[in-house]
Amino acid sequence: MRHRQWLAVAVAAVAISGATTGTARADTGTDSAFLRTVHQGNLAEIAAGNDAEGDATTACVRSVGRTLVRDHTQLDGDVRTLAGKLGVSLPAGPSAEQKQQLASIKAKAGTKEYDAAWLSAQADNHAKTLDLIDRQISAGRNAEITAAAKAARPVVAMHLNLVRGGTCHSQPSAHAVPAGDGGTAAPPDTFGDMTTSTVGRTALGGVLLAGSVAWFVRRRRNRPQDGPR
Image (cartoon, rainbow, N blue to C red; front, top):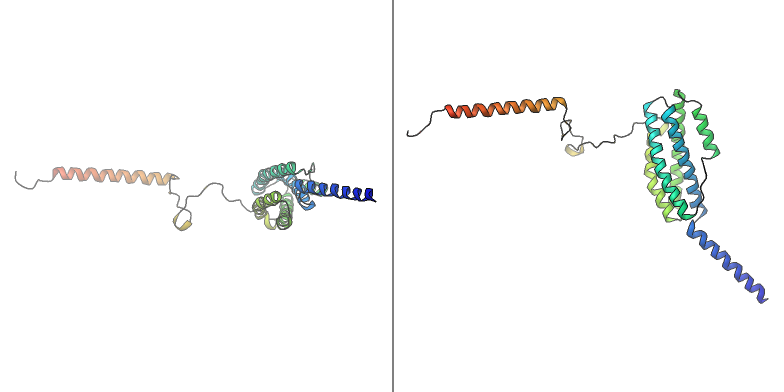
């Protein structure tokens, strides 16, 4: 009897120990599944972006493709770091469904149909990724993974805006615009960004000013002096 009780206690202790270890590495299956899913999504988006750079017919789609490669490469670096720290194994490549989608779109390379199919797929993919991120934020138990999801959300939302509705939208300029009155863009002459016409007007103003000063000096010299001689 005592032997059976001791054995039951020992089994319970091992079970608790195992559960604690699992929690320390990755809190729940939801957390681990999130890392695996977004990792595959990142790999698929990087592949899609690379394809678009070579296969798209419009500059807008090629530009968005470059953005996807850049941003999803950075996001996946964070995923890999977290997975290594938490002991979560990651898939070696995109899912079978993702590979099929990539192949189907690539078959239209160099045509307008390619651009339309690519944009439609990216709009759908990024909408699904946002839903996945929101679920992790609301239901995830691992603080580090949830923090990574929160950090990734604005990037994925920006991507979705670039392809929303299956239409390619121009990206905001990466160059800072000098501030004008009330937060509006400053005129072209503002600060050092001077156009040729601005330089010409500035030079002409300088010439006129110099001429006016010279005329005033000559007039003062030639003016009769008042007062006793």
